[in-house]
Length: 239
Image (cartoon, rainbow, N blue to C red; front, side, top):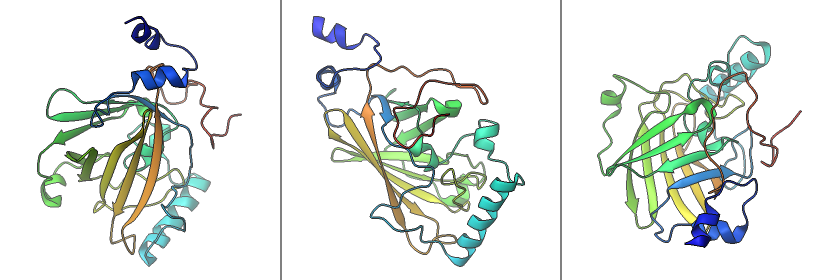
């Protein structure tokens, strides 16, 4: 009991032994606060290489990058704290929390922009036509377990977001499939498959890895204000 109590006391850096002690024994138990150790503004294609853009996708990507550079296109997620969408939210340099409750759903709460994703468990994914009656920035998500892997399928996206911070485009036909699993006592990975045939010539994947952080609590986040120190995340530029 004393060991458990020590491990929940907030500290700046938690020892590996304490983090391992707080790791859940059930591989399907993904609950906890996680933090990436690496950040890329441009989404990294699993296996390397460039985004498999179609001609229409390349044209839209060029328009997005040019508009973000000259100010004619606003990154609303950073200026107004609108949700990042998927998969951009998966690359967040700030912590997030997975909550597997109440029964029948998984909540993912992101510190950045106070984004909240609700994943309805063991529920069929509605059709594109049904979901586009009310599209969301983060889409509509359903999940199921395949063995120890949480599989999350999402469609019904607004086309107002980017796939990454550089302006990688998507249409409202975007569909994503995330496969989230534990890969060690204190780490999980999320491998997301991107399907958007108008802008991408074939499906492709990106992989994200996060570390369990029992010492961290989600903090307030307000656009335009300074937040917690994220200099420990590799790839983040700190003034």
